[in-house]
Length: 356
Image (cartoon, rainbow, N blue to C red; front, side, top):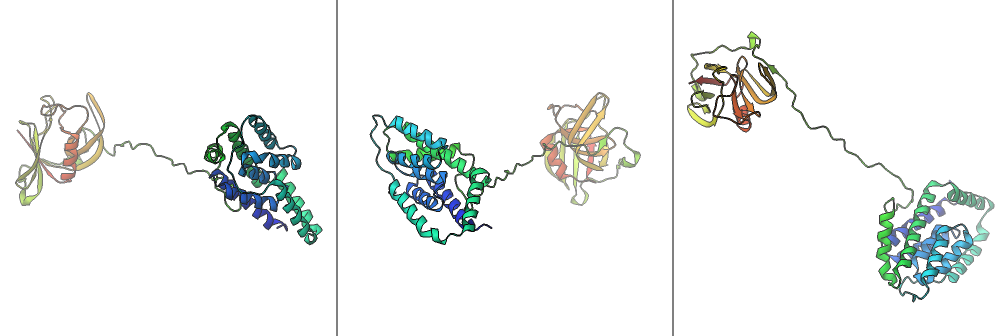
């Protein structure tokens, strides 16, 4: 750590706080922080530009001329002076501003402070200070990055004054802050160390919309081991169990609990060429989605499917809405919301009674 590290840290803190105050229209605070920064580093172009931005427009010229004395290459100060000279022709000076001392008084104070502290400086401290200043002016990324933004911000503030004409200084300040905030590539609030740390914003990665994938493929040639045998001796609703009654003549399906009907739905059973099987069966598999393939049809993602005999099932239907009329190859077609209700009403083993 170099001997002037605490001074440099205090300087960057003052510069950052002053810039933050300027963008928020707090000119008095901006001026105080600018004075603090100037006392800590009298050769800083950025500190003097901040000080110029904090004083009333009619008082800026001496400060900008002083910037050119210590930094003849300062394009910001040169352009601001040119605009001030152009706009002052025939325009009365605006009132208001901060209560900062004039340039001569500030420079006198700097000279006195320098004479007071000079005897205490050693050769090593001077060498380290000069080295740190060269680094910040020529290659130091942190301060140069902040200085560039500050120069642009001060120039924007001076430019707004030029275009404002006879608008009072107090009215300009919100405009200055807005322009700086909108044009700045970083937030106007600075940390005490004034070290910019750019962190990439989190970008959420969205997964694709869920596409149901068939978990079971049912065909008309299911393995014999999965084929339940019709049982004519099953007594529907014995012991108050849930069961399903399908009436082909009325194209209806009724859900029962014991002997009590719970809900009745209009369905579409098999056509005359592909009739629905008659008898009493039990549901042996339930699939949220299934692929159904047969002669003349290919139906992916058939919803809420419940097989009760070979390839015969109760399921939802998205390819027609002609319920109440035989339409299927033997299955029991239901309106999809009705099939969903049945899917959660029944379970594997639920009795299905099919009759005319």
